[in-house]
Amino acid sequence: MRQRSFSSVIAFGLVLAAAAALAGEPASLAQTRAAPQPDVPPASVAGGKTAAHFMLTSPDFSDGGALRRTEANTRCGGRNISPALEWRNPPDGTQSYILLMHDPDAPGAEGFWHWIAYDIPASATSLPANAGDVHKKLMPAGTVQARSDFGNEGYGGPCPPPGKAHRYFFRLYAMPVTRLNVPADATATIISSYANATALGKAQLMGLYGR
Image 1 (tube, rainbow, N blue to C red):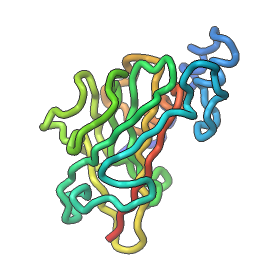
Image 2: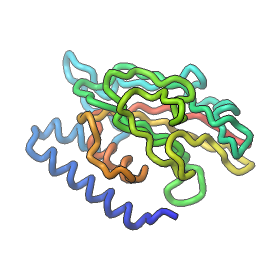
Image 3: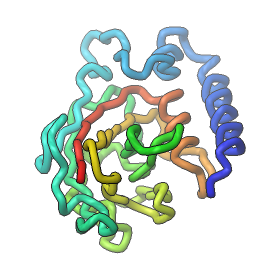
């Protein structure tokens, strides 16, 4: 069982460390990276790409559309195949990406984390279907897949209780560093806090799944 209070303390510490690291930069850049309101893109920069241009799509489902049964967890009759993802127009200065998949409708205050991948190289522009299977080795070289709330590394597909469909948010963060300075066993809460504090921009895609 996760020790949420301990994780929260570490997460807060990482946020403070990220803010301190930015303290020596120009105010405008620090405000962009700190992203106190991550859903609001930073102001446009003439001649460059900003968070407003950053987009995440999938050939397997549309934003707000239904995820396929094959993408559901094997515990719920699926095949646990992560959907293919594609992105374009990352903000200038992007050095790597963080990918998080989260179900805010799951029971519990923190929802449920289904997929955590970081240190995705800046040269990547897509992930093939089933890249979340760590045994297939379909992720770009150097990518780290952390443990989901299922307790396994890699993708854990939807498995909501019967009833209303749940929302599954795929969020891709453009990071200003090539590698994250986080512990090897860092939780999704820690990584999410770090991403929201320091990302240059965020692209989002949401799929629905119900039983």
